Length: 115
Length: 111
Image 1 (cartoon, rainbow over the protein chains, first blue to last red):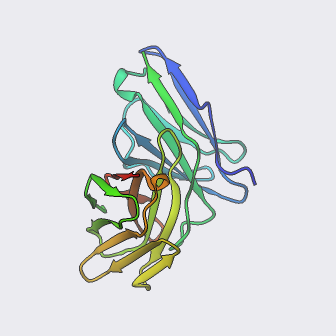
Image 2: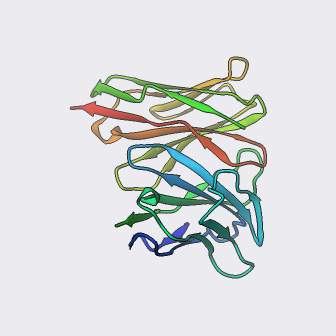
Image 3: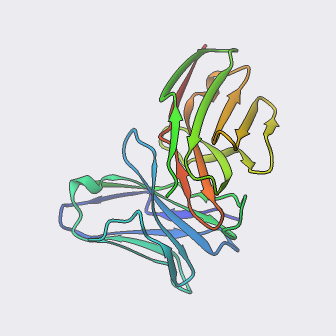
C-alpha cells in the first residue's frame, strides 16, 4: 500500500495562472479531506469529499477554488487565477470511512508558490 | 462548528524532561481526538489517538488523557529526546465529520 500520494510535491505558478493539485487516496479509502497550511501555522480544513460527492466545503473559499473526486482517478483541488496569498502547503488525507475513530492518513503535501 | 485551542504555542525542555501539551474543544459531540507530529517540511503523522469512551491511553513514552466533562485533552511525552523536536497538533472530530486542528505546539528538546 503506497499510502496517500500527492503530486506535484512542489508547484510554482505566476499570479493569474491556474494550479491543479492531485491526491490519490490509500487503496480502499473513499473519503478525502483537503487542508491548507500557511507557513508557521496550523492545518485549516478546506473540503471533504467522497467518491463523486462533495460532503462539506465549508472551509473552501467561494471563489477561485474548486474540488472534485471523480469515480475514477485522483481527487483534484483546483485554484484558478492564483494570487500570492494562495502560497501554502496543501495536504490531503484519506480514510476508509468517516466513522468514529477512523484514522486519517496524510499525503506528503503540495507546496504551492505563487510568484 | 468545532473550535480547538492548543497551548502552549512553543515549548522548550531539556532532554530527559517531560513535555505536556494541552488542548480544549468546543463541540461536546466530538468523539475522536488524534495527535499528529509534523517535522519540518514533512507530512503530519499520527502518533496517538483517543476515543471518547476512554480516559487515558499510553504508548511507550507517549500518553494522552481526555476529560470529556471539561472538554480538554492533553499529550504527555516522558523522557524527551532530541528527535522528539517537532510541531505537534491536536485535533478533534465529530462522528462523520472532518478533523479540526489546534494551532500547533513547537516542541524543542535541548540536548
